[in-house]
Image: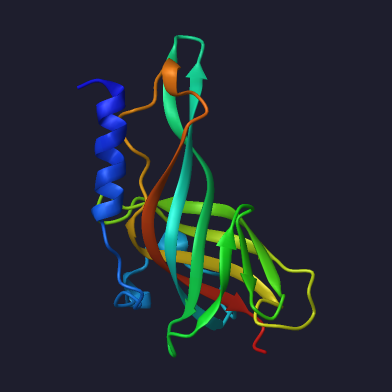
Length: 181
C-alpha cells in the first residue's frame, strides 16, 4: 500500500471513529497503577472528561532516513464529569484552561501503557498554576486515565510527508488534585 492510500485510510478511519460526548465509566482509583498515584494528602478536587484529538506531525526521527509521527499537541474540549457541562479546553503545554480563565500546565512525571495498546498511555503529571482563583487554581497533580484512542498512526509518515499533520480522535478522564477550593 502506498503512503497516499495509507493516509487516506487513516483519515477515513479517523472520520468513521465516533466518540460519545458523555464521560467514559471512570476507572476506580484502586485500579490506577501505583506509579501513577499522587502523594498522600492531595485530595481530588475535580474530574473532567476530555473529548478531542491528539495532533501528530510527520518528522525525521534520526540520521538513518527514519520517519515517525510525533506528538504536536492535544486539542480537546473538557466536560465536567458530574454535570456533563462544558468546562474548558485542553491544548499544547500540556495546558488545561477553564471557561473562567484559570489555567494549569502539566509536566509528565510518569506514564504506563493503557490496558488497550491502541489507546494513549495513562499519565501522572505535576501541575503548576499561577492563578489564585478559578477552577484550575491550586492544582498540584493531574492523572490522565481511561484513555480511548489517540495513538499515532503506524503508517503514512515518510520523506514525502514530512511536516504533514494528522488528527487522531481520543477521549480520557483527567483527575485534578490539590488544595480544595
